[in-house]
Length: 256
Image 1 (tube, rainbow, N blue to C red):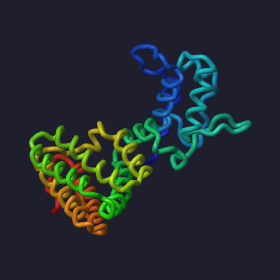
Image 2: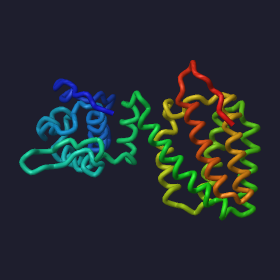
Image 3: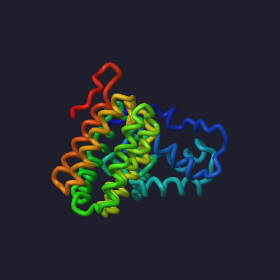
């Protein structure tokens, strides 16, 4: 995503807070993250000096300095001697950070960021399914079967279906024993779970087709087929995303 530089008026515009935030540093940070991602403060340009930021947000220098420190931790700015606080290129941003990822997704009309998020999830979960097929005990297999059967009953209730969907994927991840992989996937999911762009299509036809993918994953894990389980998970996540990201007038059928 290429940010488009905005006017100096927007850069000094006061935030649209309905009431003064209790945590001013956090609020200033959140607003600056959005402005950087939108291109109000483009990569390679300096942030406005402290007095300007103090006036823009009606806060003290202490609050501004704390906000800038947090922006540094998120990878959005660097403080350079003699040059001030410079906005960094997007490649340096911490995309696992909730504010950075959320703001980037909101500005990404192409859905490329979500494509990358899904690709990351797909690689990690396919590998964890591979390991789960080798390690899963009878209790795990029974739980996966129960979740698949429960989802068959919930295809007319997308909200309830997706709760069980998340439980199914989490059970596979836990069975793999890969705590880091699971933590990354769960962190990414938490940050996009309420995003309409990520959730996309969630009607009955999607739920029915999606659960065919779950059943295939369960069957390969139950059969202790690591390669088959990995392939089933990879295919399921790919096909589900292709459908969810499609427009209203495009086909909704998943390949099975």
